[in-house]
Length: 73
Image 1 (tube, rainbow, N blue to C red):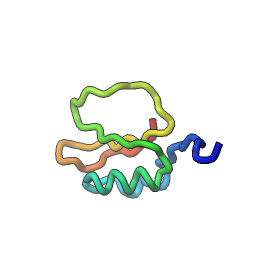
Image 2 (tube, one colour):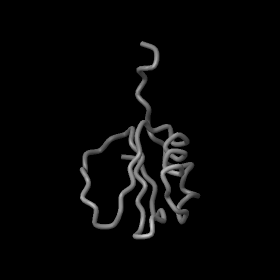
Image 3 (tube, one colour):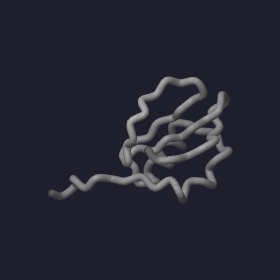
Image 4 (cartoon, helix red, strand yellow):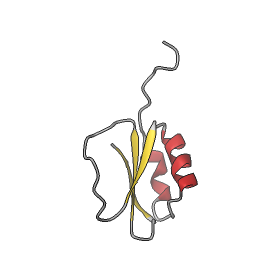
């Protein structure tokens, strides 16, 4: 079926962006570049679901929304 292929996430090429501020437009750009279907920003102390999702990009940020880690799941 055309268009039904599952997108997988590859955060490797994005690691140079750590230390940059995460904004909605940056998050969308990184999501697209990683090949992932979805993205979320994880802030300090935020409650999150912990299920692994190979098609999701996670941007881990500090209290000023500066990215401290970028990974899939």
